[in-house]
Amino acid sequence: MKERRKNTMHSDKNVLNRLASKGVFPYQWAFTLLCPLRNVFLSPKKLICRLGIKDDSHVLEVGPGPGYFSVPIARMLTHGTLTLADIQPEMLDYARKRLTKAKLSNVTYHVCNGSRFDLPDACFDVIFFVTVIGEVENKDDYFREFRRLLKPDGILSFSELWGDPDKMTTHEIRSLAEQVGFVFDRQYGSEWNYTINFRNPC
Image (cartoon, rainbow, N blue to C red; front, side, top):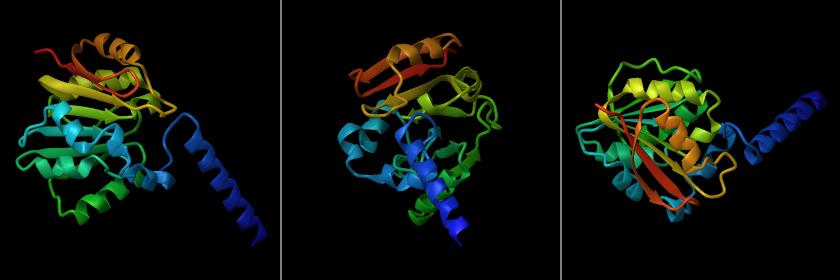
């Protein structure tokens, strides 16, 4: 019994360390990502406007966490689809429960392996990240995959917010995107809190 308690305390300490440092956000703290105060920095409504999503768009959200943005986006895709991709199946389970509770059936779930997405070529109109790209280890692999997955003229979008320990600069993201052929489209906000969009050239 004493040994089990010791192992649990050690595990809890590891999760807390991950929460406060760089790297993949621990699924055990997913509930903190549902705080309504996130709207102050970036609301789902504002993000939808920045992404230019239409009701028939096919959208990929990478690293959705518990689905803070997923629910309102799936709700507006009345003739489209939303695919959620994450390397943590526990996060996808959390998001699935919320989307199921909201009675949204236009969503599919994909567990990533950290380098390649087992999804068809040119199947998405929009691919977006919110405070996630800095956590990705194999960024070059991901950006090449986005070129493959996006339809011609599709949008690749990154939103970064102040306070995230993995926050990347617009210059860093633009460098990664342009080196695989993406074209800068537009930027919203400031360097502290921003959304930066790229287009997949025809």
